[in-house]
Amino acid sequence: MSHHRIGMIVPSSNVTVETEIPALLARHASATFSFHGSRMRMAKVSPEELVAMNAQRGRCVDELADAGVDALLYACLVAIMAQGPGEHRRVEEAVAEQLAERGLPAALVSSAGALVDALEAMSARRVALVMPYLRPLAEQVVAYLEAEGVEIVDWAALEVGDNAEVGCIPGDRVLEAARSLDLRHADALVISCCVQMPSLPLVPVVEKELGLPVLSAATAGAFCLLRALGLPAELPDAGSLLVASGLVSTSRGHSPS
Image (cartoon, rainbow, N blue to C red; front, side, top):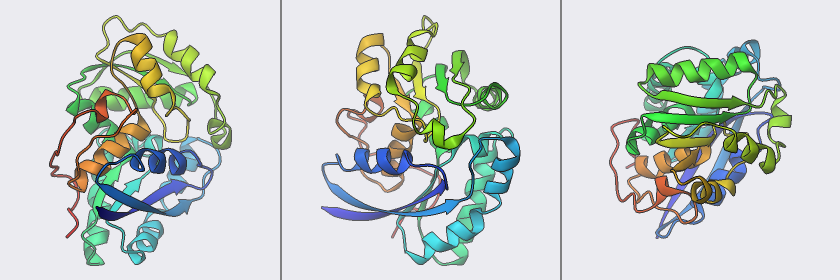
């Protein structure tokens, strides 16, 4: 059984991604993982704080490089998507260059890029979203995904601006929002388009109830981390994205030696 170190760059007020990603990867049949975090200060999910948070990225990458991680997850979806179309590619390229300067062949995944890639892997071109953000940021997420060729058929924003409060949104509120969406033309539902909004227990339940593939920022992140590490992207009770996905190669980031 192989072992892999996962580095996570997270907003300082985030708690959910450091719960859900380890919970997901602990289910893997042929690998074990340890998790190593570095934090960027952010309390309010506002354009100004997101820009200031992103400016701390370089320090976080250096800290995780010191730990010799095998893969790195830049775990804030909206911080990247709010900067305009294609930003996840620019961020991933910059981080890859920084890691290369340190001589670290780590695989790289961003939450924003992971969601785009997971939807592509599922051939999901018409998608519904549940998001915690205030409406202006939610509209930017919709525009970002549409620029990637994804048609957003319906979406719900829970209008929570305090990031600590996002981590406390109850599952029944997320479920209610999902049930309110018009899913008649959807190929998939993203039940949490945010790594801070808890949703992991809901994914298989809602998938069964609504009868279409359900994923989240966390399940997309886990899928792409496994794929980047060259491991089978198969995890139980995590939705159809992670069922019998098999070994999938990736051209993004750097494969660990």
